[in-house]
Image 1 (cartoon, rainbow, N blue to C red):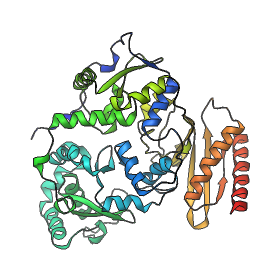
Image 2: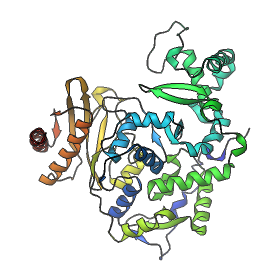
Image 3: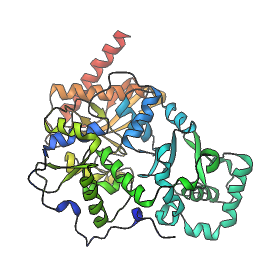
Image 4: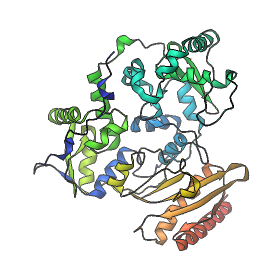
Length: 441
């Protein structure tokens, strides 16, 4: 089987399609307007005015197109935190309920992700050619351990959905980071190839079941063409981003479309009116806006999109997961350091970006001590050039307080901050706010 086009590697010798000169009639956005448009498309422009309901969780995932999964939980696990940044307080079990109800499925989209079930067909080609998925699928394991894989599949077929923990380790090794037991490896290759799907989660543990039991209405006669998949994922990327340089597009759903092919597709979509071409002040290349965001783009260009939300982001939030895009759009140089040796970390183990009124103004390394009801900020750093002010203090204090209370941690401690006076002012604001909340209660 030939590899799908959207998994082809880029040819670095080809020109970047967005480098073409812009024509004079191209409408322009200021950098601030471009940020506002991006945040509006991501649901991060303004605070919500009403309490979230379960349907809002699904709507937020549909708006982003994908919700990346990560298991680190020094604070709430990433998918829950990404939703909290957009929805405010909500019950975390809603996410698992939507998965169990069949509104979502799990697959390799950006990375391991929750995806709206209506997009299943957009990922089916990947399942049918799992060898193109790199480390996510082991051809060698399937060749050498075919009998073991078949045994795992037979167990699930006969007994129903199963966790990795339901299989006793038989290789004599201890568990550990990336030290998967053979049955876990078999489950994962069956998952990547689409034979198994995730039926539900409990305590964040996956339950694997046969795809035909999880999604009984699917058959490959419904499979869209590769050209249609490429088109729809390209449009979905641009829509989720609000606006996109050509170099940002392929990362969102990890399509890895060759540059020349992407350039042709972008031009065709502009010609048919599905995409609009804009300029951003100071950038030499074009950006692309989905036609559904035409009104938002005009409002942004007119200075009528006002970012007012201050919140804390996950390291795996779509706003920051592409380091190059975060740097180009927000001037925010972000790197997750949890895999960096402690002595070499600059900011901390699991630093959370601080979004404040349309700008990424800092980052904090936090840990929720849930049993103690204490939210610890191990370090907090404002970005260079961010001027501390009473309003900034109140905005950040409000976001931190809301996040801590969502973790059932009414006490907030700040161990270290840069600049130090800002940390002292923030601690005082948090203490005042906590006292006011207790009086109100």
